[in-house]
Length: 299
Image (cartoon, rainbow, N blue to C red; front, side, top):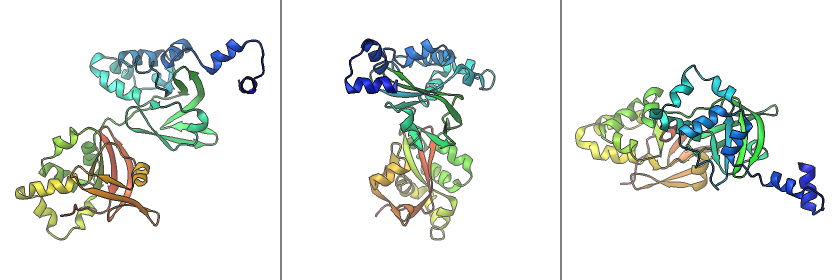
């Protein structure tokens, strides 16, 4: 294909130009190509069950990390059957969209990435080692299957997005007991969970412990509910903002209304006066960045 493409670009005339055009501009879209391949029957059935055929057959270019039938067979027994049930349509849709990256990303571009944001909203991790490419815990076994609306890269495992929301992750982590208690005391659990995708700069228990003695106890009192809510909303930004995007932007508007400054200071990522300790913890409804200090809105 490379040699033929070079000849075509150079303008050399030869027989079979129509055949070349079919390679340069494939006629089958992502779904049709998967159907025709014969090794993605489970994936195709899942795409149909999730109602994603039209979305994956449109004009917008997409890249699909496509699990083979053997990849689906590696899932625990009964998983595929469970996901194909009508009542699990949204869960199935979320999983499938986690395998889709907007835009046409070829292999040579994939190997230069460390992560890619999927149509699900969450990011997949990409690692290259010894000439092999991994997407989360899946190996890329074949690359650059070109279609009329994007590219397919074949993977040997089904990759799974997290299904836990920000509050669930914080509760299970064990380092955010004070933050979780504060969110509940402020009465903003539903507000945060219903706000769509959000980014939370989450202070650890140690961060809260840095506050002047008695501050946390004072804020948790019912009469200080609104003040506590304002402080907590100052730690939340609308939408998914990953660390590289945050640093590039330099600032962000919070749900509280005020702005936070985000910058690199001697190699350390900072938000206002707090150091960002851990970045890009994906949740079903957003992203968590762990910080070492409670940041306070201006009075």
